[in-house]
Length: 91
Image 1 (cartoon, rainbow, N blue to C red):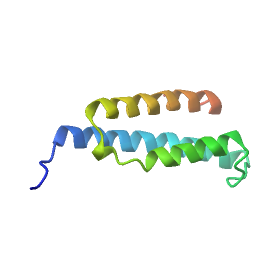
Image 2: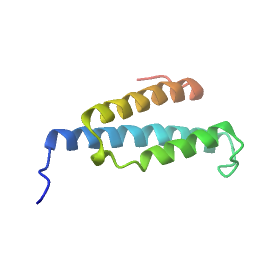
Image 3: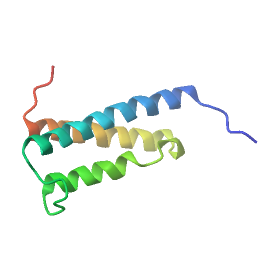
């Protein structure tokens, strides 16, 4: 039996994927611009980047709507945190 496709949930996941990848990229860019060794696991920013990488590998399609909302909240909070770290001004 095939699982039916929920277009609303799929759209929500795609938007979340784009957003989370943007947060990851902003931190990676900050690390590279500041000459931080990406392999230094003792560096806070590198550890945070590794955590982001693990979160990006989570299968969002296996999550409920409540779990997706929690993941969205996580990425929104991390986005705010990264903006603070990088002193980035929102447009």
